[in-house]
Length: 367
Image (cartoon, rainbow, N blue to C red; front, side):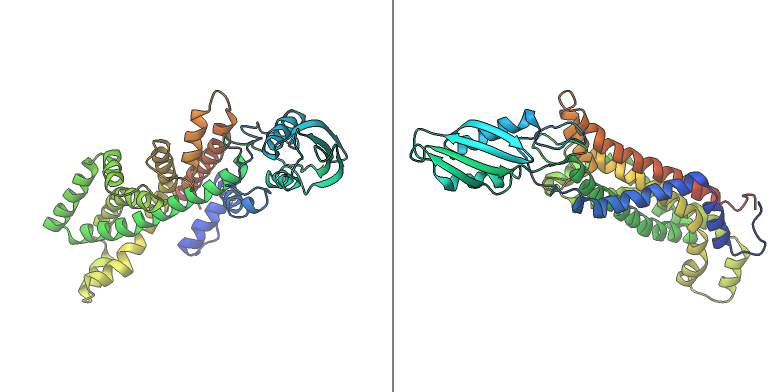
């Protein structure tokens, strides 16, 4: 089906993009992932930093926890802190009837450890026997769900993956915006100036290309503490180079066009010509390159975090979670599979959206 004639170029590109099934599906996936990362941690029922010492490295599943395999070890640990032993434990209708025994009278204030574990509700003393050395307690058992399991510290992996997605997406978008801002300005000025100025500016780009990126990051970490801001600076400092070359090539082609020569003949300044004529006409290739740059930045951040040079605790990212999962691959493979699935889905969706944008912005595309 052909497009209506005389449509503005922007609207024609949007119509082509809307008819690209792969790009539309990729955009929907990105929207859902973004909403999940923003809202999801509030709906999982677990704070990302909350640890459950008795529920470490749980596999993914829909079963409520603590189950029979984890309930008794948790009770034994809590009873030890109360300075007692579990004499009897029976669960019925979500309420645990717990009998604690000790050689000395049991201090009821120690029962506060039960609700503090987040596995149980508020306890109620049913009976005291043997001069307080035997205590019968009724306590509700919480039903906790960990759809992606837990990590080595007993933290909910789904909550942490969603929170990590905020950091990874923030780094991807922020570093890409920095690369766009610096690269567009630098490339447009170099291409429009031409001659010796262009040659000198491009030699600076070549020198920066020659610097090993990982070595550059290590030097920054030596002088400054590793942090999210440092990663943004490190990635933004090198990712604008490709953008500058793309914009320069487009500017060299545009500066010979008639509308640019007409603007020069009218006496417009170089800054005005760049702002009104050059930069707007480079946005097509730049938009496609930016869409493909976001997944590369996210992957680069994940690589740095995997090496321990990226995001540091208590913050987390998909790269940090993947690094933790790789260290526990034999005992808990789900710790790697969950965050990796989020990362792969995001990267594939961004690449598919970039391919769709490239087709939609192609002026030679069929109408």
